[in-house]
Length: 262
Ligand code: G3P
Ligand code: CA
Image (cartoon, rainbow, N blue to C red; front, side):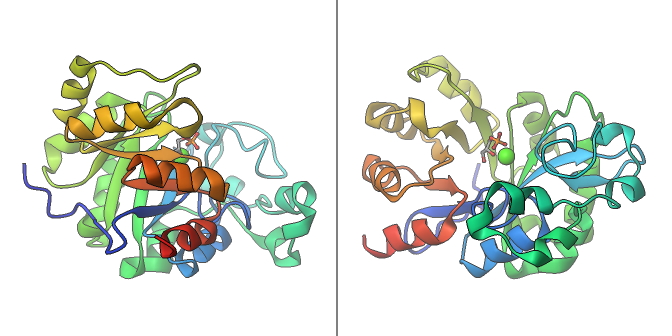
């Protein structure tokens, strides 16, 4: 494959604003995405869930409990019900040093609203969350990408191989990232790397469990590696020294500072 949509910034390393600039603003809201774009992240990362009436929305959890003033599952709520909730006050309560009064009026945005807001002014790292709960979510995602003519501006990541394989069957160019999570020291076999290389361009992996030799092994197999979620500059410097291709961070400005000094 030749992947014309794969993005390589001039700095050589990609900044992904994890759930937006979610260290500074309520995650997965337009406020957080706006800040991610302003901080010059290469991608804004968007977790996707689906409402009862079939709308793709930006939300990390399956329930609204943690990041809104409501309770219940996204899949059991209509978009109107979901968008009646306050998606910002929880952030003000939890992070008073970054609190802003206007965050209380943030709502859960649809993917359509996010594409409308930013268009081609950014890139989107779209994550299919819990695709087994939402059959057909990939079709909806892809239809929106086509409607907004954003194929050259998106990458897709997922913990679900099936979800990525489905998207690869429709488009041979879109950058795809297999997400992995380790609860102990990360190891990966050559067979696994070859398997992932059959449908994806790279991996996203939790930073805390990897080391330099893991990074080198992944890169030697031809895959890209974007660790998540790296929030302190000392750790950002470590990952950069290991040779990672990108970093997911809640604080894109901190990472921009680190790579500016390279
Ligand atoms: O960006 C990678 C990361 O988003 C995967 O973990 O739980 O934050 O969606 P999570
Ligand atoms: Ca995510």
